[in-house]
Length: 262
Image (cartoon, rainbow, N blue to C red; front, side):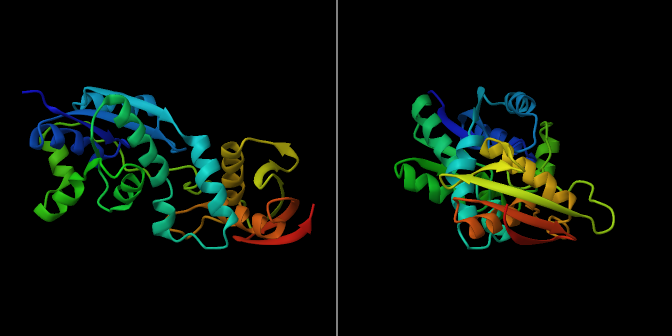
């Protein structure tokens, strides 16, 4: 009898590695790993290789960084609603869910899986394709008291690392400026999308990276359990410009002030 085929969202974390083997052993599935590029700072080729080493029959890498920036980050930054830890952590779920649905169609399967214990991905998948079956091994591990690290070790899997930089907005703080130095940043918009930093035209994902570096250097990520140094800069700029102007933002000592049009 042929095994069922399952498309697994594979992030490279220890839980992802465990999920490959668990789906093989417990669900007798042929696992196709899907690595979705949403701006995380992993070596995605290495992550792809690791998925196969854990037992996946193959592994796809799909680039969704620009789509994530355009379709998810830009609207979130234009909103006045603050992004709490949970909302920030799950911001890429809709993009990953769309990629899972797409690859499930290509692979001709009705089953997808992920290694997250929460149900955020499930909800987005259900909105896009209600007929898809979703398997979440981590929820079963929780109910059964399975220790992921022990599972990975006893099965001699390549564990990977659970990194904090799980998507484009989340960035570990870099070295900060000494004392209370200040930076003046001009952010310009075109058709509601941030397009310039200090007069330099950039694609949105590159622009976010640039603002992350600036915000981190001048203390915007300090003290946050899930740092997102570009968020405050972008939300302040959107609020001041309506997404159709150029504004100047002063960053100093971990705080910002919009000083007016550039």
